Amino acid sequence: MLKASVIIPVYNVEQYLRQCLDSVVKQTLKDIEIILVDDGSTDKSGVICDEYRNYDPRIVVIHQSNQGLAAARQTGLDAAEGEYIGFVDSDDWLEPKMFEEMYSAGKNYDADIVFCNTYRNESKKEQPYFRSGYYDREGIITTIFPRLLAGFNVDGSENTIRWCNWLRLYKTSIIRENNITFDSRFRRCQDLPFTFECTLCAQSYYYLGDRYLYHNRMNYESLSKGYTNNMWGLIKPLVQYLQDIVNNYEDYDFQEQMNCRAALFVFECCENENKPNNKKDLSERLRTIREIMNDPDAQKWVRGMKIANMRKINKIYQISFILKYPWLFYKAADMRFNGRRKEYRRIQNEL
Image (tube, rainbow, N blue to C red; front, side):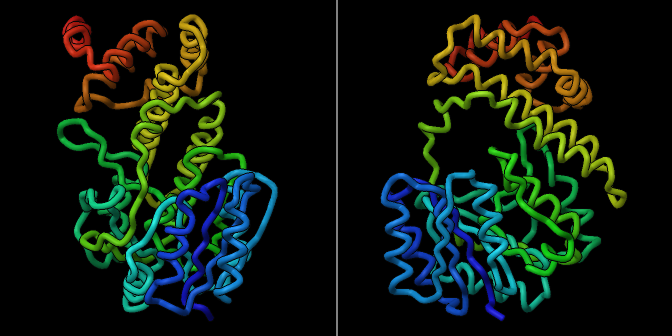
């Protein structure tokens, strides 16, 4: 059996794709297959995929019509034959020993999941989430589960364990035996339910928190300005899917985390209306926030969120949500993102 299958969904990334593919084909772990899923690219990405396949026999290229990231990952997953499965985003790149180190940890400790750390862009290191090393099932429950969906520091800042697929190697058997798949309905945060389900099933886990093996390309300008149309419509099915899992899981009570995770998604969807690339006028933005506030499920999750030790902005958001005041939410988000701190603090004090 191949040691690992590396799945790379590709869509219109010709600017970055060669750097990504070079970092994968030059991995020191050689006994791998590299599955490129061209998800209907309209630039030269598909041509670049075929070019790399022509000189590296380990590369498999699958061209399909555009179906979204979750569907592309599932296409790769269906084709994978490796003992472990890893994912790479096509605009990111890897340290040369990433898969060698992760596979060795997986084999040495018979780990169902191996998790490493990441740089943001060239050199900014993310803080480790917990102690590096091996965790058995009891350790997974006591150390990882409490922050798997939502976690918070004493100052109220979020410290949820990143759920991205591309920082992990998953043992193929745990995926197959538990029928864990990517749901093509989810167009955002597709990796959350996959990582959540795999971790719930894992009996062993190894964390390489001191090993920075992945480079995550972060476009902060795009993140701060990019507006998503119908964001709540995209996010709600995912949240409901997670809630169903939580309702039926017996080994651990995730409901408090579930309320927090769902509420944070709700707040993010409302904050989305403040993005500068949103072309809607103010009345339309407020109407969208009001529609989310009137959703019974959104109200249930936000009301169930325990925010005693959280940042004041979340308290303002919760109050505005319970009172169904879209204007208060919009103004608080506007002040938060546009640096109007004095006015922001005044609202905090009044509340």
